[in-house]
Image (cartoon, rainbow, N blue to C red; front, side, top):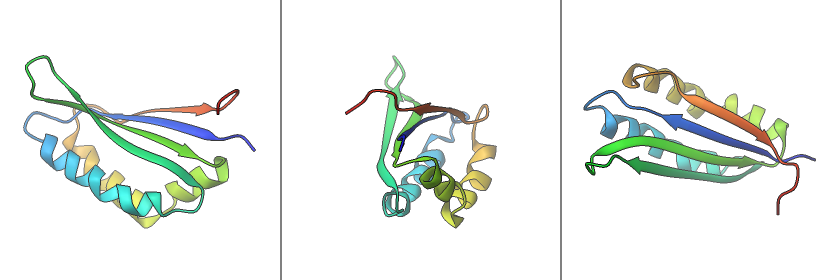
Length: 102
């Protein structure tokens, strides 16, 4: 089985950082409880002026089936509906297949 690694980046509109942050925070507990989810970590990149910048999720799933399960959950679908209007641009998602990792 090949682990699936996901890096998702979020760029909030001006004055929408707190709303974006809250929506993503609400995803942590239910996602970590999903069968097949191994890592779901949330990070914030600060701008040089110490203001909120972009947000990033680093996710690891047991396999592609686990990622599919995640994308079909109610909490995932709800977050995608809520967050889009708060972002400057669409969510940047990169999906990696593990070749040689520990």
